[in-house]
Length: 179
Image (cartoon, rainbow, N blue to C red; front, side, top):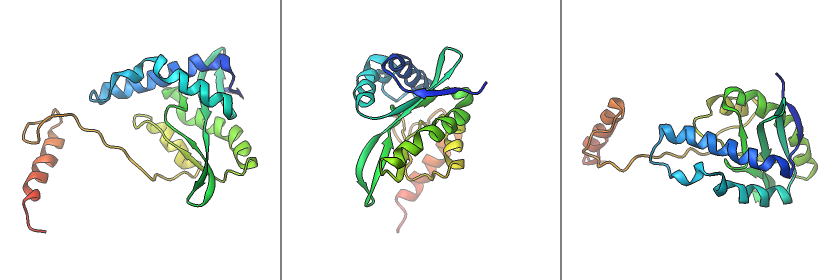
C-alpha cells in the first residue's frame, strides 16, 4: 500500500516519537552498549515538538497508522551553502518498507526545502535501516560519515563475534609494528 504523504502535525508527534523509539530499540538489540534512554518516547518527543513548531515536515500514513515522518532544520552554511539537516531522531520510517516511505516523503518535502534556498540536504539514518539507506543513495545521497560503537570489553578479551575477535587480535599484533 502506497502511503499518503501529509503535512506533519502536532497530532502525529507522539506516534513519530514512538517510531523513533522502536527503530532505536531494534538497533540497540544488535548494539547493546547503546544507552537505553532513547527507547523512551519522553526522551525524543520534546525535541520533535520543538522542531515541528519551527519547520515544515511530512508524515506518511497507511490506513490510519503513521509509518514515517521527515523534518529537518536549517544550517545557514554547510560547506558554504544554506542546507537542511535531518538528524536520526527527526526522521523515521517503518523498517519493513522504509525505502519506499522515505522516497515518497522526500519527493514531497524536498521541493519546499529548495524553495527555502536549501540546496544541500543532509539526512542521518540509523545503521540498521539498510533499505532506507539504500533508498537515500538511490535518491542521490552519498555517505559522509559513519559512527562505530564497540562494547566495553578489554582488547584481550574475546567478543561474541569470532570475526571481530580476529580483527582485534590482528590489530593488537600490528599496534606494536614499526610504521
